[in-house]
Amino acid sequence: MTENKTPSHYNFAVQTIDYIMENDLGFCEGSIVKYITRYEQKGGVSDLKKIIHFCEFLIARESKRNDR
Image (cartoon, rainbow, N blue to C red; front, top):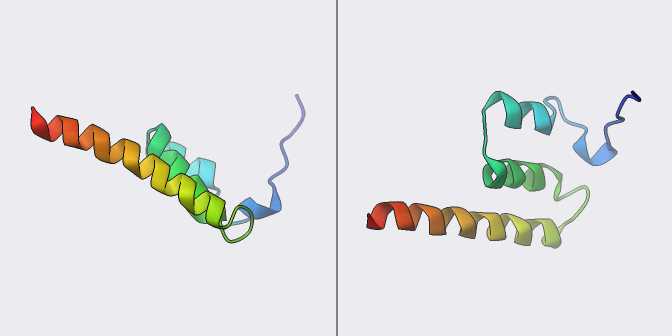
């Protein structure tokens, strides 16, 4: 197996994937962490829009839970 190289837009003291896995974050939460940590180095406004998109999923889920 080859070793994965960390892209420059993920060069942080704590690796994003490690943070996500250590905190048992779900897909949406993990994606939010991923995009917020890299948006200035990689995706800019596009990454910020993805964060909003994943937040909308979480809001819909929580709204359904609160309606029960």
